[in-house]
Image 1 (spheres, helix red, strand yellow):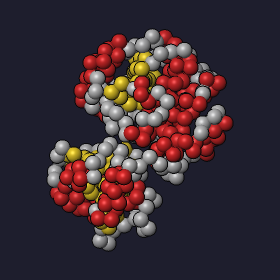
Image 2 (cartoon, rainbow, N blue to C red):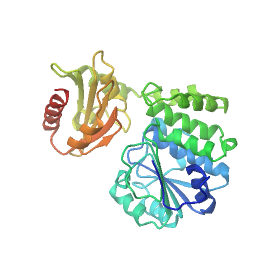
Image 3 (tube, one colour):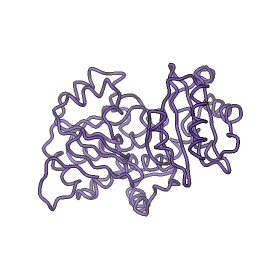
Image 4 (cartoon, one colour):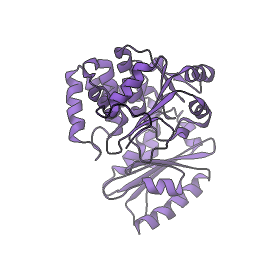
Length: 343
């Protein structure tokens, strides 16, 4: 889907139109969603490095910080975080004449406080995203739901705007990170032949893929491993008569293992990996809110269920949600919903 309110020459593709806005901009801000993941970090830093190579001086403003296993990225320490420096981020967004909205389809995904500054900005706003049902809050919307990651779309921006010669190792590393993490290390159905063609070019451009894997997956702390071991051995439940696995962790349990942001990343995929399981859900409690991650495979989709019952949404096979009920009540509600879903 492409929504271009400011039409230019008919022979220009969407990405060339975006670069025309970049040419005209003096103050560019790159934003992404709250609780950043590999794709939001990857796409943000890929665009950041590309625009710097293009001759611009953009700034990346995120609602909050990424987990430690993503902060090693080149340029990662240049990101401004609204929850840490709200006045500075507000100043950058107020001064912006172009704001990129990466890897989110609705303005509320950046949090209500930062959303105020986004919506009040008089800048041109450009959405580049791959989630379903994009909201109409940007002047230019590039939404490709069949593409595996927003990071792949940043590659398309560089390529289809005719600037592929500007793709350097830092840009390529960020793109590789985003694609790798949002495809479960290239195993999800969203991976296309085009994805592997892009990966080939990234490796030829000097990207050290093994270092990306090492920095993301081989940086465990003892507490993190103990927490994950406890979650799998003590808190994983297989539903009776259904191919559904559940892992839940209360706030007390998380604190017991000195939980840090990112320590539970991927636990829902561990549950989904159990032989015969078609759907998995992970429940984590924080400050009275239950955050939920849903995963599925085969003919089972979780995005509609997440949206209809748990104030969430996302991709067919990977979605999120939340609940203000207790952990026990939330899991009970999930079980009732999923029984109806399978039957």
